[in-house]
Length: 74
Image 1 (cartoon, rainbow, N blue to C red):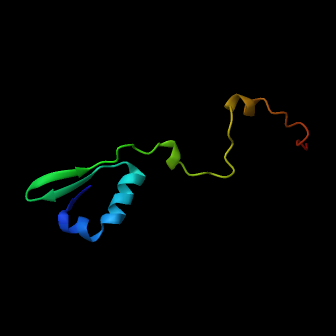
Image 2 (tube, one colour):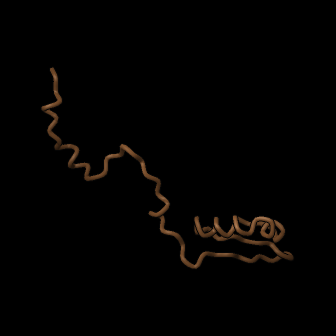
Image 3 (cartoon, rainbow, N blue to C red):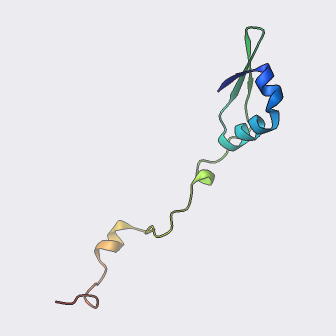
């Protein structure tokens, strides 16, 4: 993302939080030159995963071999 120095001044804390949250660098244009703000440690991609309730976690092979005979009603 590239912004002007004026935009940075107006939203400095929100923009810095976004860099820390996403790990994406922030480019600031000042006097026709670019500055870049980069997080030293990028966040883990796994830390940004959202939970999906009801999702089956495990091996697909385990699902194939489930005994459903007690649920079957002819």
